[in-house]
Length: 165
Image (cartoon, rainbow, N blue to C red; front, side):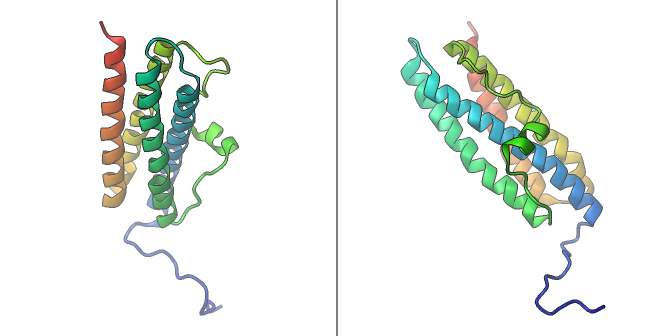
């Protein structure tokens, strides 16, 4: 049966469907981790208290803003590969490797520790997608992953520095 003229042609970007599916699966996990970390960071921005309030409140705002701006490119890459992007709390809860924010806001330095661990977790998830992207010769995904790794590793280092000494 011939395809209707108004239907979309099959995806033909030089990456087969099996590889695109594997990459999209990994990127959906990255999207879930990123959104979970965004939500936790925003929560901590609202609820931080103590002598470091001003500096942490401002730092958390910069971090959650960066995370918010990161979710769209990840989701759009998933869509460009031909798969749906996760987009519900239920999906994110199943896909994320990160724990949800504590129900009772912790003390300021515990918030910093949780966020440090969260950024390291997102970095691990991003790094885990590289093998699928490399197998498929998927440079746009590799570039996205490299950018995310740089941000998460630097942010974890900065947060960890607050806990040292």
